[in-house]
Image 1 (cartoon, helix red, strand yellow):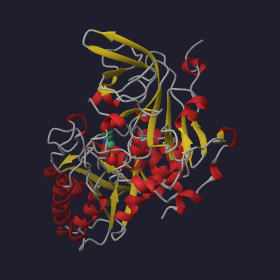
Image 2 (cartoon, rainbow, N blue to C red):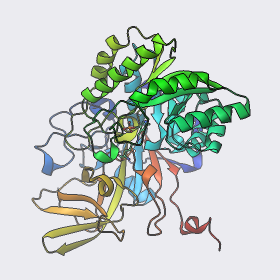
Image 3 (cartoon, rainbow, N blue to C red):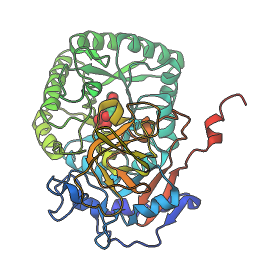
Image 4 (cartoon, rainbow, N blue to C red):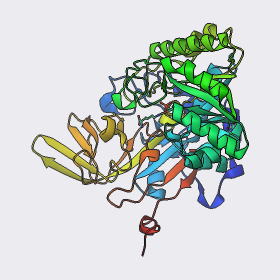
Length: 470
Ligand code: LLP
């Protein structure tokens, strides 16, 4: 299975941005295959202080010779030395393997995996996925532009989002995308009007809100009755009837997306059954669909979650789709890229305040927003071999906000100057970062075996002001 990933090497690589690690002290040994979505071997540890806890992340591993953290064949110390900190680092093999895992799991069904670009929109990562034949789920004209620049096939693009502008609709119509996931009656009418104006036919799927509790953080649940996303299931039939009559529209599908970081199967199956009910009702009205899109949302391990297995998901879907002649679409983001990335950061200062030991690092909430926005947990580990300690520290960033906290109560023995890795940052890390406090956006480095490539350079101060009046 893996040879595909490894063979996909240098065709797109910018030679000036690449570097092959000189000293690869660690053994590579297919770590991604080894640890992916499964329990690591019992003698494996990322933090000696957390030995008793099951290891929940995969990707980086400790060098058997000196205990430093490695990604593929590259020492993360070396990455920090070469590219500076803070810095996002991705593993090509974890990315491609995660995509392949999705493909493989649903192989017995006619499936198209449309990677949700919002999770991580870096051009090089999109290019790797496009080369594997991935589809893409986009939510803006900017994401469409990125996918096309990366060589993505427009006939494999679905366009979600509640606020598609006329310009964005026109761009997607001209590109010839697979379908618009329409989220309201008003959008349906606008789509018909724009397609008529451009004398093209717009492929339509209605995003239906199945009103399912995804049992996830409320900020990332999208299938509740009160959610702004999709059309209520009770309105769907009437809207399909309208779509049938409106000019220059072609009904091709139905879709739903109930939320993100969902770790159990039940919400997905509940949503699927509600969507299938609608599909049957549509068939009775002679509306036959080419595809059913079940969205993304499958969770990953950040800490001690036990995310659902994709093969269980596939097995549960199989009998449900035995009568359906069309294609099944998915829109995974986090599951493809989440565990493929980490954020390298260096400790600037230690500071004691009443009741808290602060470790002040050079990465902040502007670089990784998830902990402050969703109280999300990311494992934080030293890059050098961990030292035993009982001390609990809070890891905070440089941003002038009290919520600039990357982790609380972590058992870590840390000194100023130490390097830390914040794990499972591939999804919604770089893509949600900002320049708040006039902090330049971070570089992103892709590791492939012993090769490191800068796939986004660190911004300079000049970049910060380039779009403003001098
Ligand atoms: N499809 C649609 C229509 C979506 O809105 C999303 C995510 C996805 C697919 C991909 O979901 P995934 O497979 O990645 O769960 N910033 C938050 C997550 C927001 C997700 C928004 N929509 C976080 O950092 O947890």
